[in-house]
Length: 200
Image 1: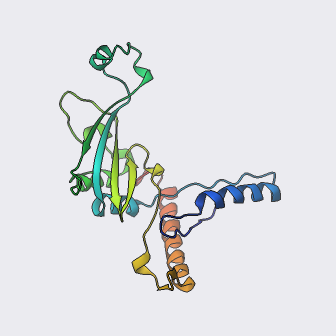
Image 2: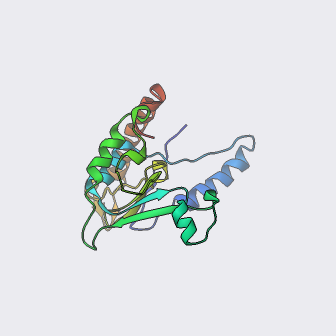
Image 3: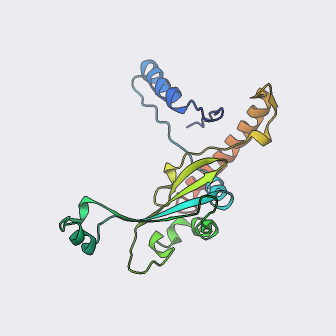
């Protein structure tokens, strides 16, 4: 097992092209093995998004279509064919003040965490999942509460490293990457030692 940290420059990243070519090279060199590259979502990143980001929309999702709606649109009675959503959006410059409440829910041990449907009571509407759109550092991220692992784990470290001629000084960004990898390894060890403790 290893940890791979990749640099983004503005909106430009290298993850897709790097991982695709790396897998091809790995297969050529070690055909008996398979290289898997998965995302790691640090708990403090979710915390940062929820408490420091601007939540611009919350989508409450029911994974079936209610009977009354099916009747109106003459969809039939096979509920497994679709889903029904209720979306709440903030004003153009506003935000939905729900990050703190959801952050507390995430901090509960996974095995003891109440179902998502218990977070908010909506009259005459039942939901199974919530998806949040969050503006973080002028980039909109989607946080799927059922699958937080789908979140793209980006850190804006511009203010924490030395920039020269528009680019980070290697020693500066390398030192940050080493500290970040140590922190991620500690998180992984905690999860391995206590698989039911903490977030996803």
